[in-house]
Length: 303
Ligand SMILES: *[C@@H]1O[C@H](CO)[C@@H](O)[C@H](O)[C@H]1NC(C)=O
Ligand SMILES: *[C@@H]1O[C@H](CO)[C@@H](O)[C@H](O)[C@H]1NC(C)=O
Ligand SMILES: *[C@@H]1O[C@H](CO)[C@@H](O)[C@H](O)[C@H]1NC(C)=O
Image (cartoon, rainbow, N blue to C red; front, top):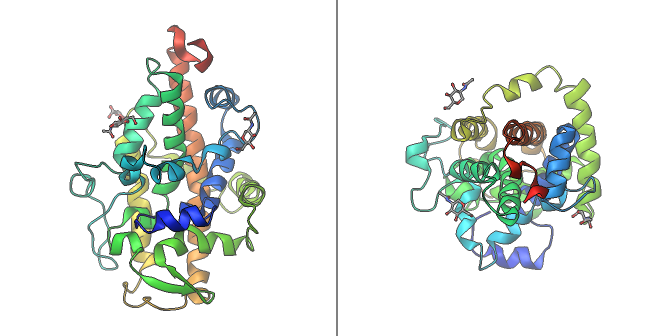
């Protein structure tokens, strides 16, 4: 979501945020199901919330923030505009695609992971960093957050079950919400339910054999390579699933049936991956802080 007119519609329609808000909240709940108990207590303290909603409750903060005057400059952190040419060629070139002046989701993951690990920063700054990391792991997994074509699909008008949207919105919101049968203006309970179902699929269901591979490029010493690997994987889906026959083949078309049938499993898998990877990333951050625990300020409360 990066069109300026969106600021207005977001204000008018609470809940209409990237990955629908719903996607981000689901990712956070999945992560809370997988993180270690050390991670839970560290982040509950840092985020000042000792409930099971400590991650979910901050998952959409970065979207609200970017539409405020104070945080507007962070808008470019939510995506990386791959200048590839789907469907014939997908790919991300970090030097080419991460804008030098405004940064991108990959550089932002690097910056805010580093800041979360920096115990010299104030608790406030580290809580902000945590909220950005929690959000950006979600964004990286939305294929249209890794694509330049028509501003990540914002310029492609389509209909979805008869309603007018742009393609970016369909991938942020419409597909996921249809998949769970609608969220009835209650994103949190529906996200929690979906997260628990996907958690089970990861542990003992259809994702159980593949999920070990989901962590293979995860390296806490190299946040750029890690985030870039996730982004490249999502971007490849632009060629296979988002624009398999190019933008013109779907412009002004109805995407609620055949297109949806192919896209829904991809959206579901991306949400599951994002949640599982977010948990692993947060665990690595907290473990890394703990190995330096001879230094005082390694738990948030110590400052
Ligand atoms: C924790 O977060 C949830 C979700 O945002 C919120 O409803 C709840 O009030 C928070 N609890 C505390 C103690 O801050
Ligand atoms: C890193 O984050 C800080 C705090 O939000 C910000 O001031 C700085 O510009 C960021 N740096 C980069 C390179 O994005
Ligand atoms: C992780 O990243 C660091 C820093 O780039 C590198 O030295 C190390 O070899 C990487 N580890 C693995 C397992 O790739």
